[in-house]
Image (cartoon, rainbow, N blue to C red; front, side):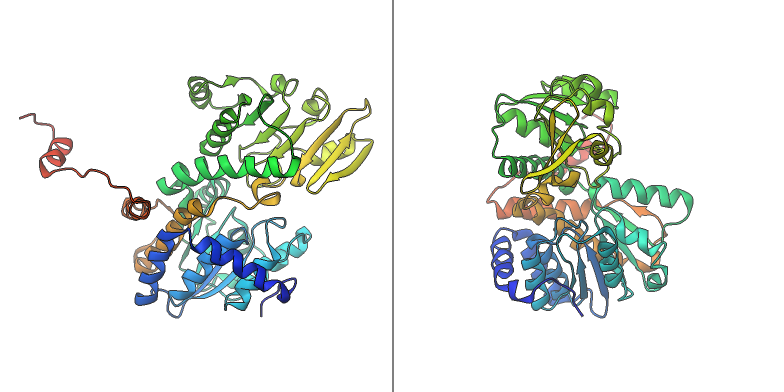
Length: 415
């Protein structure tokens, strides 16, 4: 039985789902394939991804493939109640309510897993964490699963090293379709859409500090530069820092950057990136937000303790006034800003990422008898199939190698 906020919100959610389906052609082609082949007949799939329209479409596609789909969110502030109501009405068991407490959020995840899933789609590792602990009894039917995020894959590999990974997992975040396309272009656009819509402030002329220069950081910095910001990048990796320098960005430590930044965006996947010593030197009215998966990159708890006043200044903006009168503005409680304060990645972007998820789940089913309990790379065949489908949908064509060119590239003799 689904658990949602209000079933009467479904008509609004249906319109959102119908809209994104119009712009997700790769997933549409996969849906046709799944409907004909029914690769998930008799299987249960638990999906924990940001519960909004693009995710709902993924759930519907998996259901067309014969699966019983159980859908939940992966962040208390990214669930859209109207979408949850709509996808539940459309036949997908849904467990998601916006703004729940951490305990309520975990309870919704546990309810989702109570189906004893054969397959899972995870975004950040919450399902795997529960299946390896509180919900271990629900792991008895597991074939495998997929993980969407950088942070989640780090944790999966740590579990694999320690021998506590519950099932084989596919590293979706490492797919070319994910990091080249989703992480760079999806994050780059959706982060700034959310920041601008939430603050109603200009980006041009401001000093933007981007913490982390992985694929998400690259996109975030690139889009800020394109809108006229003066961009500073902070890093711990010397070659990523050099890469950022060659791309035209200034490199500083966060201790240095904290003094001059107007807008701070953390995109590291680590914790304690911005901490009290940084708050102490920041400009009055600085804006702080996070685009990493978990809400631990900006130390909000310490900022709250330092503040003499805490005030909701606009929707999704809390101002913390410090003893010297400066106010620091935090967006979306320090949670994933593009979803806590926005609509997430564009539909065309998630088309490719969710296509990877869908085909990876089918791969797990097709190879279930030969899998070890470890983290698997996405096969190049899946990546390339999705890339070609996307190009075709965009009306674009590329060259192909001749047999002679393939022989030249694969050999060592020069004729």
